[in-house]
Image (cartoon, rainbow, N blue to C red; front, side):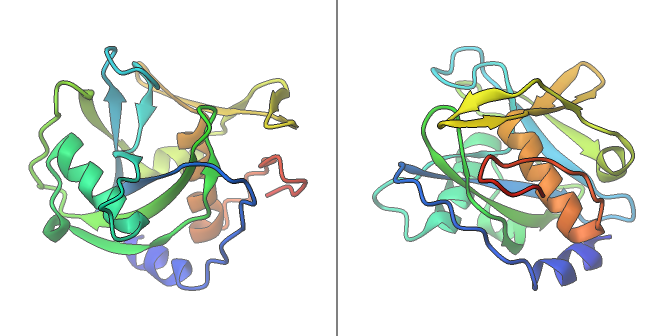
Length: 195
């Protein structure tokens, strides 16, 4: 599966996001094993945004960050203790707007399944893993259309054990599944195109 993701990301065509917004980046860590898992976090309830929500490690770009990949890797280190040397970056997905007015760029990276992760308690309540095949087999619930940056958008949600994986995180997962595995899960990014 990892080889498939790596090969398919080589021909991924980035979609432009023509919104002038502050930038952020996340890392989508996938474990390197026969049945790969996505590593996700539950944000601390003390966080000013996304409190208690499921997310990938990541955050706002700092002025000192060389690029958005540097942002994703720095934030992953700060939030879950994942170092640059722990990650083999496979590629970048298209940026998406967050409901908090950020332009968020995801990067897909492979990590050893035995990598030691430690949640930064001020930001992360817990770290958990979801088998990639769960997302390939499950159908996301789609919300009724809501107004999002002047567009009507249906928001996807997955339910895994006691966790709700939704919104931007779910959109990123759908983009990866559709591109790497031809999952054919249709959703509207609000840009007039159905993906």
